[in-house]
Length: 302
Image (tube, rainbow, N blue to C red):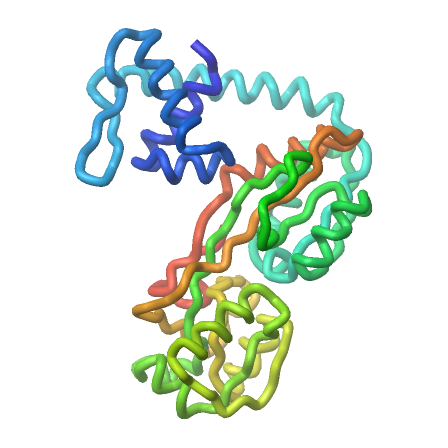
């Protein structure tokens, strides 16, 4: 039995969803289903079953989980110890600002601990700039939004984070209807050249809201600081940075929020630094997540 199939089964059991498991693993739902079917064919017994909208392990599936998880853990430890001794060099990483201000420091801390011979060089840019730099070979991987087109086969994609749009307002306004705030308060616009800014602009147009616009900024941190100072409200992705947890602001959920801003890791396959990138991916894969608007702008983050 392939250990990759066991990893897929373990993740499906943990998440209760083949679709979510495929997103986390960066493979198609059909591939996830194939892995499960192959396990069941090898064992001659069902290991998952449907329970409403969820997928849950059968009795045999729970027994398989109990036996396979220690094995997968030992295998991962063995692989990591063997790989760490060989991985060295410089990793060139391009990152959007939102990642710099949220989860990237934790990833870099863990990466530096696991791979002390690797020097990570990090710089910020927009998603468009970073993908162009990746194409030109100026960076080895980019943490950014997916381009608005299908990636060529030479590139890999691992989604990391989803951030729904929220109305960002001073906490004293938190009980007000969010659409009323967008219509009546001064508006701090998130840069329309950026993916999250375009999502916000489309939402305003759909609701025929022409806000009293004061500023247009490309920094979510600056917008949060200005909201804290009662300079206006904004419509932004709920980025959940720990840097603003102490601010007197609130993220107000939208009942009809459009699709969330999604970003992840894009990398170019088959390069001389692919081992360094793969080490980063193995670390980031277990840190995928999303921000819950009900928890507030300083809430859970990966």
